[in-house]
Picture 1 (cartoon, rainbow, N blue to C red):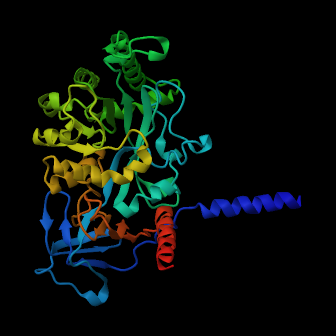
Picture 2 (tube, one colour; picture 1 turned 60 degrees about the vertical axis):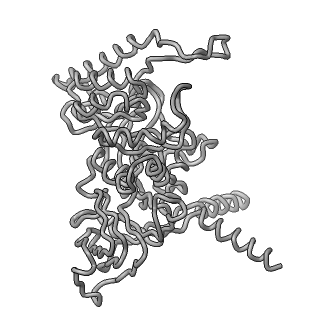
Amino acid sequence: MKNIKYIVILLLTASMSFAQQTPAPEQSKDIAIMGATAHIGNGTVIENSIITFSNGKITNVGDATTVRINSSEMEVIDASGKHVYPGFIVANGTLGLVEVDAVKASNDLSELGTYNPHIRSIIAYNAESKIVESMRPNGVLLGQVVPRGGRITGTSSVVQYDAWNWEDAAVKTDDGIHMNWPSTFSRGRWWLGEDPGLKPNKNYGKQVKEIELYFVEAKTHNAGPKKERNLPFEAMAGLFNGSKHLYINVNDQKGITDAVNFAKSQGVSKITIVGAYEADKVTNFLKQNNVSVFLRRVHTRPNNEDDHYDLPFKLAKKLVDAGILVALEPSGQMERMNSRNLPFYAGTTVAYGLTKEQALQLITQNPAKIMGIDDKYGTLEAGKRATLFISEGDALDMRGNQVTHAFIDGRNLSLETHQTKLWKRYSGKLEREQQD
């Protein structure tokens, strides 16, 4: 019994040492940020700005030379020479669903089965994730939590990254349903002696028919008397009445066209293509159908042998120039830890043609519009939530992205993380060694 007590104490101590920073308290005093270059998020820049917020909401954004405040009644942050931005937003992310890939018990990324529209990612979201905590020092303050796996993977929600639990974290629950569209091509299984090259997917038509049948059955169920409950079909109802978004993962030109035409034929009005590697080939089609894009991770290699080496870097510019509403998404290998690089993905698009303010929109205003949270987040405007941060320099450049203050709904966040603690620890060690 005595040994069991010691084990329990050790486990409790270990679990406490791995806990996230305590979420910040509610804003108790009005705050004014003075003198910073304000990047509003809609393309506007105010060189010498004043931003005030009270009770978690922005009350004023303007030119500091024309606006006067009573500084004795509020906390004033002198941000002269610095930059202030809206909180960056991760689209199509999985933060909070997996903590350690090699530890099965910490992985709640997907469910068994092919059609899982009723699977809600929000209830699996781990608000105390140490990976989520590491986003804040780069200005990444909100994100969409998306389940993976199957044909219809489940229902996503939008969260803010400083909370006690998923209920506190939720910004918008059940915003949309995510689907993996069948690939028009398949690759040979080399381990079975097949040619590893691409070839037409002979099952493509059959797979599309299966999706169509599922949508028809869901629509029929929701229009009928509902004598028996069917949770998956009931979860689909929002697609048909316009309350939910349909996010379709598809990359090839034919697949994109087929997926959009299919969704339109089923009466789905809110459509976003996720990945969208060949979306630049169908820009007119996407614009005509009012389809937005979550563009695949910028820092990747080209898919095809005859693609330009820098095509992934240029895709955002091509789509923005065509008038498509575009946001960046980080999915892929090591996507959770790479989500903190979101501002640098946007920065790369600047090197390949976009202006800095256009690139900023890819991770602020645009994802907020697509997810339906732009009435509260995405830009620095009076009446919106005070979710923003101050950076020493250009936040889209890793050399300038040095965050000094960050706020979510007016709450002043801790920027201390497991990474910053390690940095301080080993910086001190290096300094001591150099002195010796």
